[in-house]
Image (tube, helix red, strand yellow):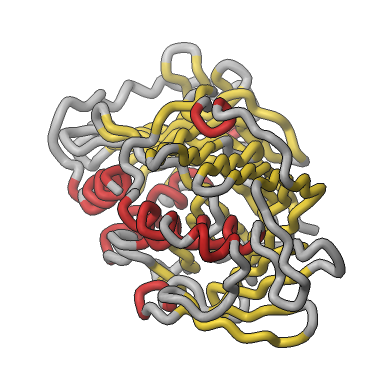
Length: 220
Length: 196
């Protein structure tokens, strides 16, 4: 029970993680000698996909009971369900591109608006290309696609880090508030699908989602 | 935050009915049962169901090992009135201390009546026979009814053993469990119920 309460607590704080030690936005240097844009596009699955992940929630020294997360992409909406190992659906919702959502089932403590909104932001960060204008360049030697959404934030997409990819999000004050690190990527069609994803938010209420891929199906 | 005890109750209930002689058969005494299972989670949006596999072992009067092997390993152990759950974390099984256990201990007290073949209405479910091979359970408790609308038990042709269970959350969301290779009334080491 406590694990789910921890999960609830930190998900409640998802949209308010605005304080704490952050990494600053690194300088982007010119260097567009490669197919950066095409490489960055491989980070985000295109077309219709169905993913399932085993998800561990970690907040501080506490780790929640693992759940199975199902994400279905149809090129427009993001469908998400959280299911216990025993098969009980905890949360089920459709997230629309215009920001709207249809929550079909939400069992306490997953029934708060903050939880759904936070989940939507995490899913969009993982599966959707960032909004804003894009600049290609390098951070150090790493190729980077930097998406600048005025007044909202900046997202760096690193399409080639140790054979996989990373995504780093920054506040309008240019401090990192979310990182997503993919590991053990496999190429499926035009997309690079990680066997393991680690999403971290930063600040006093920061948390980590450890997502181990179970299935990745490109739905024809 | 009441769903975990209810879930535990449901899990145990499934074990009990799967080890219980079917209502339409001549009761047979179950001292122990071991079986594998394949669980499929169906949602309207899923092109393919989520498939889990595992095994369970039950020994009267109240020892249980319910184990998921894939895709996420977890083990529920009941022995001597003590209930523990282990979950996979970073590749290892570690104890999940947050499990709500009170309701499980209450339900454990019902084991003997299930093993005696008293497969009728109880505090948790209303029981009705749909046909020769299907028994329908509907929750009495409103909190449980909010999670599960009904449960169908599929009875085997022989031995008085269940073929499977379908747990409906709603018209387009359900979980099926098919039991495989049941082994009855073998001696089982206590270690099966105490060691992860």
